[in-house]
Length: 503
Ligand code: FES
Picture 1 (cartoon, protein in one colour):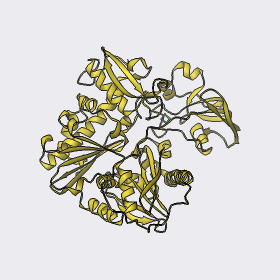
Picture 2 (cartoon, protein in one colour):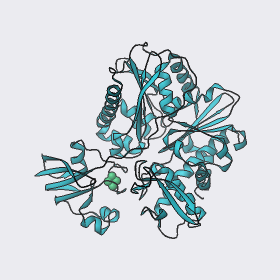
Picture 3 (spheres, helix red, strand yellow):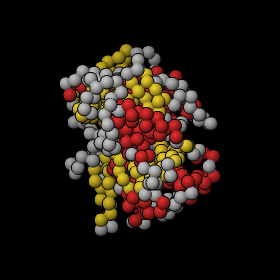
Picture 4 (cartoon, helix red, strand yellow):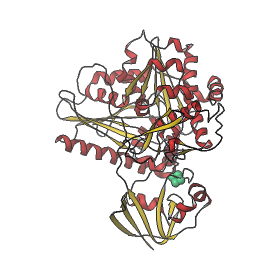
């Protein structure tokens, strides 16, 4: 049996062809991976998200029920298949579509004032990296004076094994740990090379790599099974040097409050002022939060699922060119804004667009407070349709985040008035529209005016550690002093979670 992968650009130009001889029956997604061709698999290849479509011809396994549910008759007739469910059983031609799309990743963030005293001397340059579940951001610095020489943001290649942390932990526990490690190390290496080439400098002498607890486990091929089952006690919290003492991995707070939050707390400067009360939130596939009050730090994490990152939604998309990033209501109609502007072709709703769209549906009374949608709705005539099942995913995500916020305040005995600030970290927090978030109940209306956007605060914190031994020590102190609230056994969380399912 042989199969051929043909790379085709959006204008149908054939860019490359690779022919392989292989054994019997090869899953199309495995064939693509083996050929080093990245493909998003938000559901981790379980055949339920319908996002891994490829066009294939030749000897293929029969169309499955899941494929009939995910793909229309026209799509099937055009040769589209789900790569994670379809096997090549003989000579096969797979079309791999090559579309260069700009990604709306966030590399900017704010650093609080600190003095430069690099970890490994001041010669050469250093690299700070934030490994997010969805994207990876890297920053190259000249160590002598802390000048930023360049920054980059790329998709996390591990997305091929699922959009959320749980799918990847599961993949790692079932034999995929080394593969996951190789993917992220290769990604960091490639970004490092690109940054050094652009700045015409040799490889960095020192690196700081931050990320959530699961990402650091996968980066270091550490058994991630403690992250998969109660009591979720991690054996390795990091805050350690690796790679022959050239790479520092900042300290995590708990199984679900990672080193990315430690770094975000550091760069935001929140813990420097005991007189203020601040809630920091990083919304992604997990909603990680930290409440700073009276010199104490209370943290929690809540599983929001991948909906707000554009996955798990029938017309969801990453924040790349063509994604609907904003929806407004004008003259009783929904009006969309796309990443890439008017000339871009709509490809789906990214997280911010999704929240806006749900808020718009509520304003237009097409959606009731229980989440009932009379019929599927085309958002602003874009061809991107929201269904009742999509609304359910948004309800699950927003109620998890809101219930986490309410529980932290409850444990601290505080109300919205006590908060001086709501600090939003991460890419999603940088682009979301606060009014829409409040309209759907993701955050309280009372906190809209108290929002401060931090940008990629985790990347900024990693940068501060890279450039200052003092900041490294401060980051360790922050993580060590934090207390974690376990939401899974908290009755207030359960109650609020049910309450906030409603709009
Ligand atoms: S359906 Fe194939 S990855 Fe989700």
